[in-house]
Length: 565
Ligand SMILES: O=C(CO[C@H]1O[C@H](CO)[C@@H](O)[C@H](O)[C@H]1O)[C@@H](O)[C@H](O)[C@H](O)CO
Image (cartoon, rainbow, N blue to C red):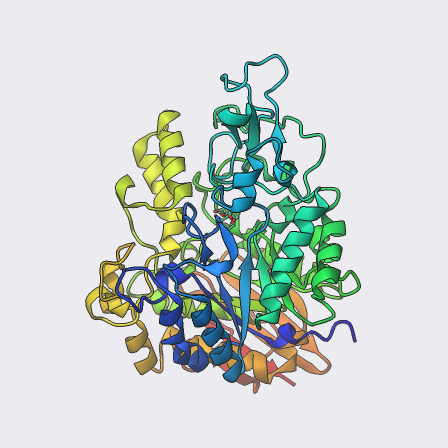
């Protein structure tokens, strides 16, 4: 049965190696640090480990700028360390998913170094263009199109030596590969097969729906207030040959045939696109990551740093749209956190001492009881919070640093810019994992590359593991429910109380079994009316944040899951 894929009953744990665990005291996490903490993953019960990039890289974007795809950056370790990690994971019944970053490479990759020479047979491996008609090459406004890079500023860099511009949708040191060139595609597939032969079980594909550009490349609508450049992700996403490339890749690497795990990170992807890309008949991808539910607490059409309050009915409506949209074909990925998003307990929960644990648990429950494959980002299982930075100098992330420079140069009040960064900067997700209450939270014996959050004295893995009521043990139980109950894996989703401003409630139905999830997503007590949710009298309570849960009155951030039938 084409739909019978192993990852439908799996939970994925994402590691951002720089910030997970440092084994050699250089202040930067590494592969041996991961090997030293596999017990933590086994205790949590996760099935798949997704590793953000550890390949050789000048680290301009913390590894998402790769200079050698088949070698490990010495910061993180060696190929032998990775072989040991793969063996150790497989021995524990877990799988390893590597990050595949092939929309772009580093400008220090040999391919790009060769490509800079117009006579090189690698010239057409990247996207080179002459200056805009009628402009002096290198002059103001001579860029081939008005596209903005995701890290702000023009997406084109003038190359004095060859007198032309190359495209970089991210940083200047991340030139885009030209996927129109079949030699580029074959080189990528060969690299993927090299890793599969080494024991890797699948790939998380970085911004994979940007690889097919619509030709010819033309100007887009300037984004208001951002210097006249076009920052519309739709400008370059979901191009005309994307599905052709995904099918070709799938066949060349045997992704479906070898049941390899694949998830495509996709900006500007909607549920209709996702249905096509993840359809069981299509042989393209297993899942996609959408940003739609991550874009509801920002002002529409500008940058994520322009904040807007989250309206719970909007979040429920979007999650429901994807649950219904992929109900009978395709498959959802489920996530609140990753290395690009702020910590969910600070964003959608309440990270005060009074409600941090309960709101973190309830956010876990409402996500993990949905239909799809859940992703847990390192530290989420501990209820780690945002970094709480107040000064521009504290930020290390290229996207945040560039945005601060552009926004203040454009005359935006510094306070407003710092407020936006404090809420949305990617550095919020990148503070070191808090293992102990001790120095540097047990992350490193050296000086951490990014300061450890001071709240590690109370929020740390040792304390969480020792406390049966912790977020850690709640996540362990949620993961257990997915392994033990087919209704959690396959049950048909139905949203309840769509317009309720505080309550998130829904059912999952499989045969005569009904799972009822009811959650109060506010810091205030909420009273429900009879009939608001199905009668759960006598039902088995599978998991709950509070003793004696009821569906009449829900305490702040209270949630419970009932199994009826
Ligand atoms: O666009 C991406 C794609 O991210 C992927 O691609 C980026 C380039 O490789 C890389 O920086 C990211 O870490 C990787 O996940 C997000 O980083 C985006 O910039 C934003 O932060 C999300 O709100």
